[in-house]
Amino acid sequence: MDISVIIPAYNEEGRIGNVLSPLMGFELIKEIIVVNDGSEDLTAKEARQYPVTLIELPFNQGKAAAIKRGLEASTGEWILFLDADLKGLRKEHLISMIEYTKIEGIDMVIGTFTKGKLITDLSHKIAPFLSGQRLIKRTILEAMPHFEHARYGIEIMITGYAHKMGCQIKKVKLPHVYHIPKEQKRGWIKGKIEKYSMYRNIISTLFESYFLSRFKWIKKLHRYSS
Image 1 (spheres, one colour):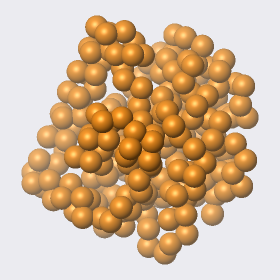
Image 2 (cartoon, helix red, strand yellow; image 1 turned 30 degrees about the vertical axis):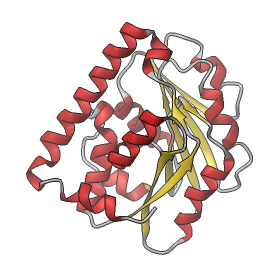
Image 3 (spheres, helix red, strand yellow; image 1 turned 90 degrees about the vertical axis):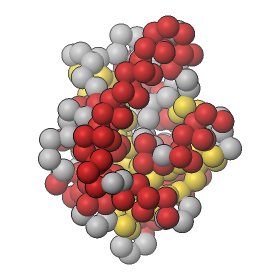
Image 4 (tube, one colour; image 1 turned 90 degrees about the horizontal axis):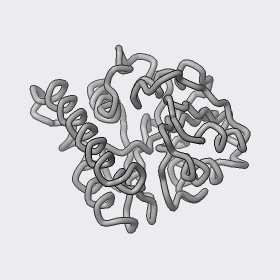
């Protein structure tokens, strides 16, 4: 069993190193792929300081498109997705997720925040299916049709598809891990606009793709033990 790590990144200078550092030295990690999604800062330069494969997109295409590009370039049996702006990520968190790939029948592991920041903890408590930290079998992703246009709705699409296929999903807590607020990264006004766009995209994907199923897969996900 081997793992390909895919990290989509857009203007994450000064933060992406916090995610790459804990990944160093893992025997089961075959490759680390950073997809620089049209960043206008020094994200690419910072990523090059680590032994990673760097994919440069000429302009910002959205999270789902970046993930799709990374998947095409990857070769691992399992795919580990990580957001590029995490704070508090440690090797122990990665180990806790990877351990579940050794259990027969597990198809996807979702990492959820706890004991970090109130807002991100609460969002993962209410909606764990929104987490960008997940380890999933490659075969599931390759079978998903046309997800590259989902942008921020990609996590919803992956979780919904996995549920539809009858996959076994496990939630794993990631204590003291959290996101940097967009207002802090982009400035108050630009951050608010970007956050509004993200939530609008997520809600649109949720409504359009899964409303007719009455959200049964969401309720099922909440029943998985942590």
